[in-house]
Structure formats: C-alpha cells, structure tokens
Image (cartoon, rainbow, N blue to C red; front, side, top):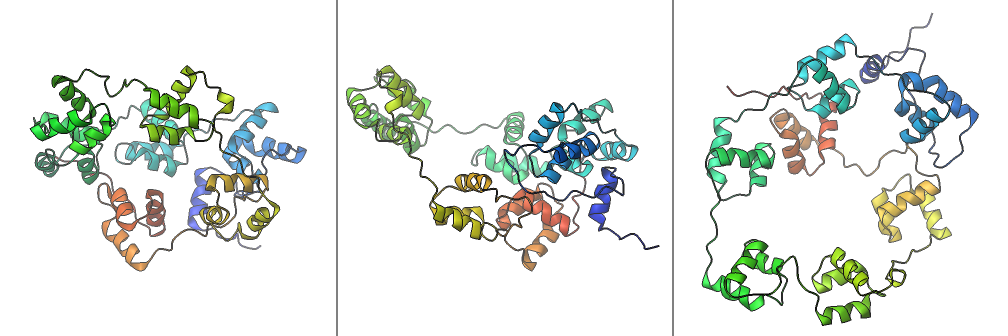
Length: 385
C-alpha cells in the first residue's frame, strides 16, 4: 500500500483547522466567470460543498465572487451551517485575545474578526488597555508642544487620540501663536479677494482664527464658509460649465465642487448640458495587447502603455474574461538579504510592522507575509508595571 503523500505544514494546518476530510482536496482557483449563467454542474458543486465549507471555498473552486455564490445558494434553498468552535480554538482565544491584534487572531483561527469578538464576549474576555510607560510619558512631555500629535502617535505606535488624552492628563497644551501687526496687515490686505484657507496656510494659523481677527479689525463681509457668489464668478460658470469639468471650475474659482454644483442649480443651468468626460472606446489593437501581456505585465504598467487608468484596465480584463485568480503576480519586488536581516533584527518590537513598512518602503501586509515566511512570530505585548 502506497504511503500517503506528505503535505507541506501550512496546508496540513489549514486542513486540520477547517476540519476538511482527507478525501476533499484544497480547492484550486477556477477560471474567472463574471455574469455567466449558472450551470447544473456548478449548482451541484454548491450543494456538495457550501453547507460545510462556506462561500469562500466554493467561490474559489468556481471562479466566482462570494456574494454570487451566497445568492445562488439562497436561490436553490441552501443555508450555511454555522461552524462550531472547537476546544483548541477556544483555548487560543483565551490565550491571545488581549495580547494579539484582533485581525491576526482572526486570521490564525480562519474566522472573521466579528466572530472572534462575539466568542470572546461570550467567554467574558475584554481587552486590557495598554498602560503608558515612563519613557512614553516623557516623550509626550518633551514633544507635545513642538510636534503634532499624529507624529508622536506614529513614533509610539499608539492612536493620536490616545496621545492627546495623555497630554491632557499631564496638563500640557500647545502654545498659541501670537498675533502680530504683520499678520493683521496681511489678513486685511487679502481678505475678500483670496481664499481664507490660503491666507491661514500662509500665516500658519486656523481659518476660523483668520476670520475672527478680520472681524475684530473691522471686516464685515461673509465668513470663510459662507462666501457670497460674485457676478464675475457667475459669468465664468455660464461660459465654461459645458466645456470644463466641475473640479477644474471649482479650482479656478477657489470653491468646492459641491458649492459649484449648487450654484449651477441655483442659476438654472441644465444638468444634461454640463461637461461629461468622454469615454474612449477600446480598439481591437488594445484588446490584442492586453491578451498578449496580461500574464506578464502588472496592471499599472498596462494602464500606462494604453493611457488608461488601472481601474479601466481591470474592468476590460474582466469583460474579456482574462482576469484569472491563478495568474502569478509579477509586480512584486524581490526581498533582499539586507531586508531579511532588518526584519530578523527589528520584528517583534512594539509597533514594528508600521516602522518596518516605512523603513523598507513596503506595505504592512507585505511585512506580515515576509515575517511568516521567515518564521518570525510577534511576541505578546508587554505590559508595564
């Protein structure tokens, strides 16, 4: 009797975690089929696998979306059975719920974050707030008056709101920039002619404070958020609304696009005649270029070659049924030995993922994937005494 072929450990763990029987293969990605009619064979596949393994499993086999599989299952009268929690899974929740990020724990269990939260609530578990260390408090005390709260939060690996609350507890406040004669002269010279937000950015104070200073010095015009429309602006609208995009008109008039749309309605200018970007039809030559290169070139490069957006290229690939789930990714940048050494040295510290992503010029999911390949595990968050 031939020995059973040994699977790699990640696949074996996945099979055990999802309780797949040995005679059920891990699904291979099927051909992408968007807006295609459902066949009897596909419905039989849903009847066989959906009640036990769910929509994601079947969607991967059939090359369809999860929503499409769920709707079809409901249409043929199938309901998804709830996956019961096992004792090892409950033990993992009890051990890691207050020490590991919720998304990581959900990925480890192969469940959604909401399901993990509900199970932890049923077990009476709550997340213990991370205490502030003496070093962190000293950092806030030294930097809060000079550095924005978001920058301090990024450095400490905490939310900006948490930094602001801690600064309030320490009795810290930011110094208010004093009003000088030069500032008042600049405001009164430009108020009414230049956008107040631009004046505020030039001086280095808030727009509301600019308005208050102007009113205190005799300005009686409209405030920065209620500026009346002038005759020259209405004339400009009537001349250009058929030929220019709304965003460009708003930029020229130093208004928001929403304000321009409201003014067009108030002037009674018909919506049907407003400028609409023209859609450029796809040619046979462009489709042939996509068919030749979609497996080897990334979407962004294809978009640059065709002078189109990546979103438009993806939609065209879907319509041509060229976008497959099993197409290898070629746009990924290879990891170097130096980057791996940096990962081994720094991974595991508090807030290391974001810092590594910024330092190496990569995304956080890329950092997580490389750490998994290198066998690096993030230790439990240390609590301060």
